[in-house]
Amino acid sequence: MVVVAACAASALAAGLLVYQMATRERRSGRRSRESLPGLDVSTYQFWATVTGAGVVTYLVVFAVTELVVVSLVPALVVATLPKAYFARKRSQRVARIQEAWPDGLRDLLSSVRSGASLPTAIENLATFGPAPLREAFGGFDVYSRSLGVVKALELVKDDIADPTADRIIEVLILAYERGGSVVPDILDDLAEATTRDLWTLEQVRTEALEQKINSRVVFVLPWLVLVAMTARSGAFRDFYSTTAGLLVVVFGGVMSLIGVAISSRLGAQPTEPRVFGGREP
Image (tube, rainbow, N blue to C red; front, side):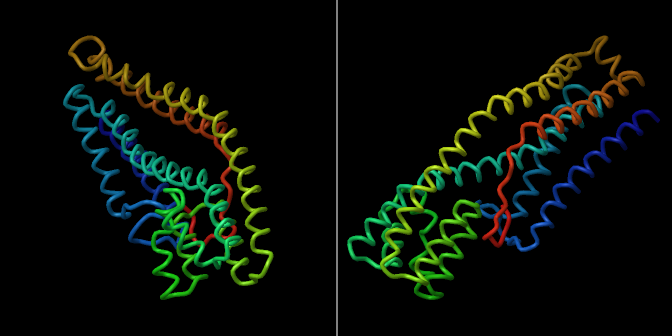
């Protein structure tokens, strides 16, 4: 009965985890069902990766420890790693684009001052600009010819899905629609403001990095020790097969989750809302 109850509790925790992730997915109702913003991965591939990671981890740990509850805890932890991986991958892509904006805007400024129109300058940016922006604006020329410049910029903005890009592209749209001799001045001011914003953002990221690393290590290390202790037959495996051992695992799992929630809350960076964006990342 104790094993059944422990399994039911672990299954409930897994269900709550999946429900929370699915709820966050539904809250971004305008998100494409085919792919995640800023990533070349479909939602179906994402959930298949989450499920596969959890199942494989459970089978491997259970084969080593032969304990259901001890196997479920690492499986739940590993099931969250794909989300962290894809979030990290997307944040790295956005960070590269953010770092490239000052140089890209100065390239636009140089093209406009040399006599090119703003759409032509953006097409040149997609061909000769910094590598991250070349990738982001790769389809701009095709979109602009078939849908118009404004719609093409909006598609690029939705693909990047970043507040910094939202502000910059909205200014580019405004500069294109109003045009005139003020475009170089607008681009110059925009490049300086973006440089200051990125410098501040980099300082915030650097300050928060150490705290994030410490919180992850403190969470993972006890469970690695537990798996190592129960990998062989003996007193530790026998103890964690009893009622008291199962209660210790359940209590430890609950306390670990509370600790992770508190540390994540304290170390979380404020997320800037996409005021000008159509889809949340």
